[in-house]
Image (cartoon, one colour):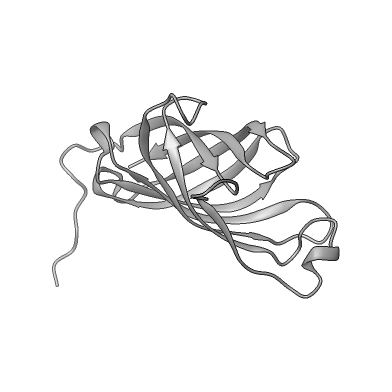
Length: 160
């Protein structure tokens, strides 16, 4: 075996990406689907035990209908707190347009939904984001309490 050496470029690159994540439960083509729940989930004040699979559009602007889709958020989130509305997020931001087309970043962490700003870890990536690490900050843009549909601004800071 031969030892790996650092790239000739030297320092890591830092990239900031701002996208809007659209979690859609309503309508004929939902992008967030409840796939499992505990016997006590419906009586829980926090939805504890709920498991949701997502294939949410990522756009360059806050309005799903008028903004350009730049990728998808694919993965799961799990209501993992009995005391507050908090999700364990496990998702890939898979880019399908622009300079990051074909690349992805993996995001994992606690999303305390009622906090103004939530921070999760970037734990890896593919394509131009190979060896990625960093963090993502989420801020709720809109939330429809009747349908559960939400738009969330994500600022993702990546070293790769």
